[in-house]
Length: 500
Image (cartoon, rainbow, N blue to C red; front, side):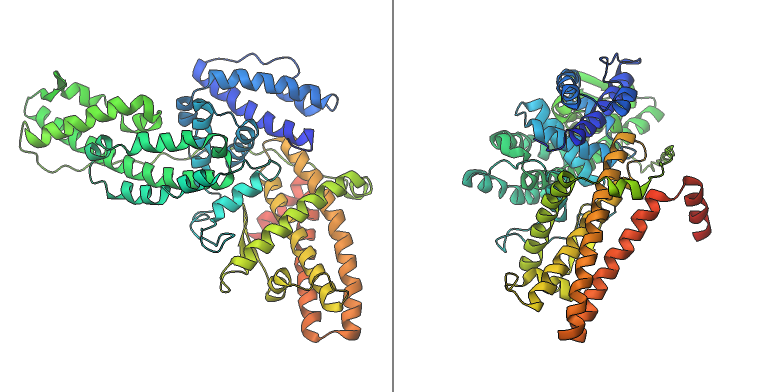
């Protein structure tokens, strides 16, 4: 369970807003929302957050029953906000509902996020696993961060072995050369069976990363083979129609006409649930085989052109200005303690990566929205085995680790802040986190200055330079965050224009 109920409410409010819009589009009208759960009420209310959470959970369970995986597949597109996908991943991971429908929804959403990274190519590089053999992908690291407040389900030895089956499955999928061979194989039901066998462990970050990668590889292969088969059929139909023919062939005792083929909408068929569309895919595949065996005419080459659909622009809400001195003065010990726990987890995740990664790559740590670049001294500090010593070198290493952890948290939170302009609730929560991180950052930089004085007296020039470099990186990040929180929108716009 999430520690901060306001953060949980923000997640659920994001999922609710997406669900309600989906239902409105599907039903062609407004969806009545329970009193107190309207968007304006959630933004303005500060009282009885836990009571609101209980009502929200009940409302979302009802919405879950109304929304099928096929509806969700149609709703997710290149225009969909990754912020919504991340909120839904958090929501499904907390529920861990093993029923097929919600597992399929998590399957769809995590694969969507994998297919549409915030930065192109973000998931292509691979790191090293905790045991030095199994790969730890950037996408898995991102999922671990997204689900940092959720206890990961356990993986049994049998389930770990089951995950290893996905690598040969990817190779098997890549070998298919036509749609009919793929559909007549057992690969689709076999993979679905594997996912069911994983039970609640399906919601483990490692499992989700493995499944998303497989889904992407298999989905691309399936789409390519289907579009190839459908394209051949349409070319036959167009050529036959030019010569006055009408019947292409017979499938399952039914004549398939030119009109039938003309009504085939490949893009729409690929967007609905595979389980629902499987019979239609098989009919397309069988018709293609009939045409190959008994073509009604000799086919001449044809060119098919497609136009890309322009992407609509999205309206952005203007951010508010923060009274930073007042907010910093109001930071509570409870907020500091909560952030300290997150910093400890960040330190540990970076330490694991740096220690198991190849020496050539260990200074670039993949995060959810950015790559954290370490100096050589910072990387060495995370590998140090003398951190418990009461010595100058141990003090320097501890400060370097702390500076990196705060920089990582602040950079990640700042990226989330910049992407939350369309959600006042999420933006306020990211603002709160950034204020706490600024306060902790101030304390860390003060401690670094104390260590710097000792280094000036007893340390080396290399140690002094390493410490100053790390302090400067955090100071630069602090300045960017402070400017974003305190600069009025008009000034931000002017500054941005001047920089172009």
